[in-house]
Image (cartoon, rainbow, N blue to C red; front, top):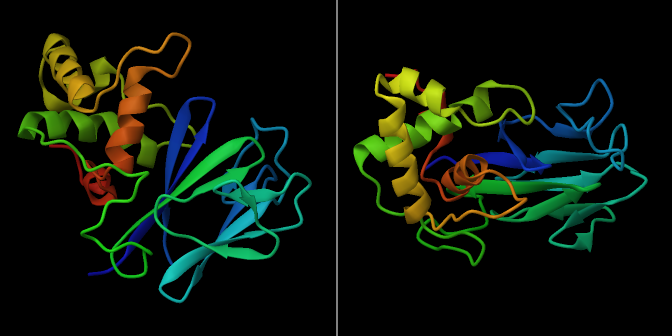
Amino acid sequence: MAMTAFLEVRCQARVEVVPLDDAPLSIGKGPAVDVRLTDDPTVSRLHAIVEPVGRGWCVRDLGSHNGTFVNGARVWSQQALHTGDEITVGTTHVVYRAHGPGSGQDDSTVTASTQPAPTLTRRERDVLIALCRPLLTGGVFTPPASIRDIAAELYVSEAAVKQHLANLYGKFALYDEPGGASRRVRLANEAVGRAAVTLADLKAPPG
């Protein structure tokens, strides 16, 4: 089974799913980087790079002013990544996710930071895919789809979408948090992070 890997870039309650292929991926706020974090003043123009090493990936700091951290420990040269590792770039959090050989995790194992996805009905899964699709196709920090957009993609009423979302919030144990990120954003994060929705799902055409 081939490894699939991606980054979840999180900043100010927004998320971007960035697939990793065979090429290094640079992070910073300069105009030429692959992942631009222009909203984070603590990020350097060319801050860090995530690059393939053997069958896995590592992160390397590029002489940034504020440093690069993996799970709270500063990276002084380069650091191998395992699925679920959290990379901190400035005040932005980037979670590395991988499945398959080279991921640093056996496929049958669930780490402490990753819970399995709940059992979903076919329609609930359709709603999740529609919710998360903009995270892959949009720009950095594109929000998940609105209720209206989900209804339009699935040819159902907005009331039906709201009911499915209510069921999904319960299954993923997502409750209202005053002042926190919206539940749709948190649901999208959980769906991708717990592999309820895969990159292949998001790349597939609607319908």
